[in-house]
Every structure is written in structure tokens, then in C-alpha cells.
Amino acid sequence: MKKIIFLAFLAFTSASFQAQEKVKMDAKSSDFNKLTVEITTGQAKGISPFNQGYYILHKFGTVVTNSYNLGGRYMLNPVFGVKLDFGYYKLNNNPATDSKAFNMDGFTVGLQGVINTSNLFDISNDMGKFNMLIHGGFQVAKLNSNIPYLPKKDNNLGVMLGFSPQFRLCDKVSLIADVTILKNFKQWYAWDGNLADRTNNQTGLMVYTSLGLTYSIGKNKIHGDWAKNNSTSDQIEDLQKRIQNLETQNKK
Image (tube, rainbow, N blue to C red):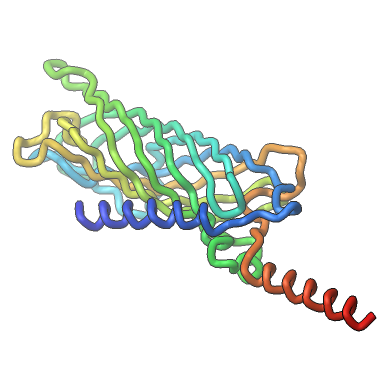
């Protein structure tokens, strides 16, 4: 799992740089709102580590809301953007199971790159009101343990990678879902709030699933996520028009 996440993160980083090099904006492409506010809520599910006798048993898809996120995203162009987000989650045992009782919460700040795959692959016309964002980057987190004899805070750094399908409700508002995998480093606490076992006290794995809304800020009607980039087909069409104009001038 560690190698898969690391390789996926490297692949995303490489794709981000390629996206920046690929996109060349024309004059009309800049007429879109670049700043977006995003509010989501959903389920933060700690995967590992857990100490013996502690676990979370919430099946994916069940209605368990224990995380809240507020983010701001700036699209540099219709393909590539950057995102800053702030989050909070609270983990505890499911009373319906025989897990030992626990209660722990965390605060996060993330900085990520964002790729609009619909514009990257020039399929925005085919997608209609749907699109798909891929995001990845770094997160710093502060975990708060409620165990009296332990230090209250555990600060750590992690990498995350996720995807966010969107559906446009109107010009400036979209419905967004998200699935993100987080890998923390130097995480001394298990997700149950106790110190993790020595054999697994350096990392933490978590999965976020959430749903929310995005709002595009700006005077333009077009949302940055739905603006078209100057794709290869557009460049070919422009070149054909120039050739036709030259042929017409030569005939004269």
C-alpha cells in the first residue's frame, strides 16, 4: 500500500507539471472565474494503525458524518490549479460493536495541486455537466488524544491523493463528491488515541469520503472548471482558417 500511494503521488506530480506545459491559453480562455470556495462534509475512516481491541466499523456508504472541510481553489488555467483546505474530523468507536471506547479528533491543513481531467483530455463537450478533478499534495495535521497520561498533541506530515467528480447545478454552483487517501508520516498515535505499537508507530493511513458544494467567485459567468482550454483541435482549426485566408489572398 505504501509503494502504491507513493508511486501514485509521483505520477500525479509528474502529470501536474506536464499539464502546465501543455496548456497554452488564448485570449478568450482567460474570461472565467478562477477562484472557487468548496464546503464538504462526510466520513473520515482511520484504516491503520489501531491498537488491539480498538477499531472502527462503519461500512463505506453508510451515513456517518464525522469530518468537515473548507477549501479555496485557484485555477491557473482550465486544466491546472492549486488548492488550500482546512479540515476537522472526530474518530470514536461504534457503540454497536465490541470495540473499546475511544475518542480522538484532528485538525488538518492541506496544500494540493488540482488537475481538471475533462479539459486535460479535451472531453469537456462529451462530459456535459459532469467533470472529474484529480488532486494531490501535502497535509499537516494535529491529532488530539483524550488519554489523560499522554501528551495531548501529535503533529505530523502526510501526502494525499484523491479524485472529485462534479456536477454543475448552475453557472457558479456545483455539487462535488470526493474520495481521498491520506498517508501520514511520523504519526506516533494510533487512531484510537493511544500510542501506536512500536512495530507500526511511524505512519497512519486514512480514507476520506465526502459530499458538498462549490461556488465560483468572480464577475464572469463561466466557472473555471467548465472553461475550455485551447486544445489541439482548436489549434488545428485555427491553422486551417489561416491557410484558407492565405489561399484567398493569393488568388486575389
